[in-house]
Structure formats: structure tokens, C-alpha cells
Amino acid sequence: MRSVGVEEELLLVGAESGEPLSVAALVLDGAARDAACGTDHIFEKELKREQVEFATRPVTAMEELSQEITRWRSVAARHARAAGAAVAALATSPVRVIPSNSPGERYAWMAERYGMTAQEQLTCGCHVHVSVASDEEGVAVLDRIRPWLPVITAISGNSPFWQGEDTGYGSYRSRVWNRWPSAGPTEIFGSADRYHGQVAAMVDTGVLRDNGMIYFDARLGVNYPTVETRVADVCLHPETTVLVATLVRGLVETAARAWEAGEPPARIGVSLLRLASWRAARSGLDGPLIHPATMRETSARAAVDALFGHVRDALEDHGDAAAALRGIDELFERGSGAQVQRRLYRASGDLKAVVRACARITATP
Image (tube, rainbow, N blue to C red; front, side, top):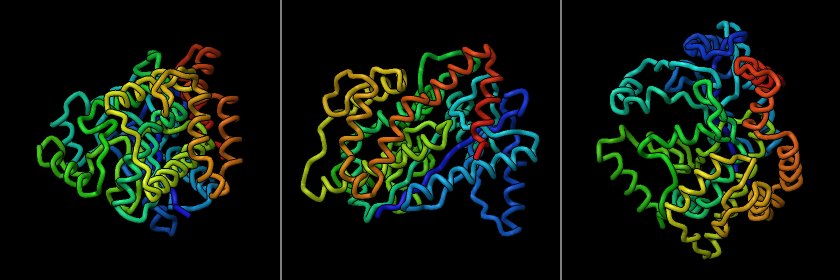
């Protein structure tokens, strides 16, 4: 069975003010001291000092993944409290913020090279890694999951607010993220050689520092034999993260089986995929979305059901189908992160109260 791992980026905020705080170094120092005492140190700094990232270990059972996410969110919350802050699984800050860059040569290079794109890039995503047997299989998967990824963006949408304003988007993070020159959907590669050749050519332009800055919607893992999807917002509820990971693993397995059976990828152009991605970011689960098979407008539920139907055989073989279907039903009943944030704002009229409530959800086991 394919292993799956998740990276989550979390916002560091004032427990009362709800404002992002540049305390990542303190949080990481606390995590490092834990590591010295025998606790796994899985936290890393990110571009901004107002965020921190953790990565789960690769697992095969979704119950284990759920435990990993809950555990590390709780540990992150503990270290944040020690630094006078809280963590919130929010993909953008609802309240106004002037973010600050983390120290280091790489981040200084990015700030100089990309200007305002780097300055404003306080966004928190969720990356899902699924194991593959080879680069050739991985690229075959990349070629075949392209039209389904916007639905993952819609499911995960958790960034309706930006600089104190309602953006009208379910996932505004994805729009900010796509300012990077290498971000977004890709063409069909056809082979691992063509994929690696394209990556090398992009780095050789000098626009990118290295292949770690290949920000495709989905790419081959830089350090591990995985396919890494990068389209999801960090999800407010860990149950949504598990659902996203379950569906992504189903997509990878379904695509690999299609490749082995000699089925070609859908010949959908990048221009259409960009429209589908924009539609998913704009609508979230409020709909409409672009149906991944027809590239025509449909309801959010119909698009999510189409994704489930597409991967159902793989989910059943993994023993995940019933839980995934239950997770989809619960998601539409509870609402996406964006929908929950807007409900909280309508009830309080205070974006800082929204952040505080989301921080409590994040830290609750």
C-alpha cells in the first residue's frame, strides 16, 4: 500500500489579539530543546517568521495520519504558548499584517529577486506526499491527476480573508501563491526525462534558485520518492486534512493503474486547467466548480462526487471508501474552513475573534 505524509504550515498569532506574531524562532527553539530530550523535532521554519511548518511521518493507515496531525498540532500549540502565542490552521491572516522574512541566505535571495511577491507571501498550505515506485511512475501520475486537483483546492479552501477584507474567494491563498513564476498547473510531460529536462531548463533561466523552487500544483518529491501535491490550503479541521490526503492517495493510485493499463492522460490544456483552478479558488464549496471530466460548470457537490467516483476503486482497495464518503458528507454539513470563518465573522463582526476561535479549533485534540 502506498504511504502518505502531510506537511502543514501553521500561522503564529497572538492568543488574544489574533494578530500574526513573528515568533517562529522561539517556537523552533522550544521544539529543538524537546528534540534534545528525546522528542522528535519535525518543525521547520518557513519564508515568514509568522509561520511554522511540521511534517508527519509517512504512514499507510489514515487513522495513523489523523493521530499524527492531531499530535503535532497540539505540540505546535504548546511551543507557541511558551513563546507567548498560539497557532491557527489558517491559510491566510484574516487581520492586517506586515509579515517579516525569516533569516537566511535563501530567504534573502527570494526577497531580493521577487520583491512584493515574496514580501506579501504569508500563506499556509498543506502538501500531501504519496509514495511512488519510480520517477517514471511519478510523472505518469502527474500527467493524469491534473484536472482533478482544483477540486482538492475547493475542498481545502480556508482563506477567505486578506488584510482585513473579505476577498470573495474560498481559497485566496492559492491566488497569492500563484504569483510565484513556477506555480500552477503543468503541461503533460510524457516521461521522467522530459520532466527533469523541463525542471533543469527552468532553473537554468536564473529565475529560480534551484529545483526546490519548482512550485507546480503537483511535482515529484525533491527529497523523497513521492508525488507531492501542493494545491491545498492548510485545513482548519484535521478531519479535512485527512480527507484531502485520502483523496490524493486515491488519485495517485488510480492514475498509476491507468498508466499501467496503457490509458493515456486527458488532453486538457493548461489554459483550461488555470480556469478550473481559479474557479475552485473563487467558489470553494459554495460552488460552482468546473467538472474535471467535462470541463463544464457544475455544483460543488457534483464535482466532489465525481472525484470520489473517479478514485472509488482505489479507496475501496485501501479500505478508505466508507470513511472518505462519510468525510465528504461531514464536510458539506460542517462547511469548509472558509465557510466556517465567514460564519464566525457574521456572528461576531470581529476578525480577531475569528482568529481566536480558529486557534482553539487548531489546538483541540
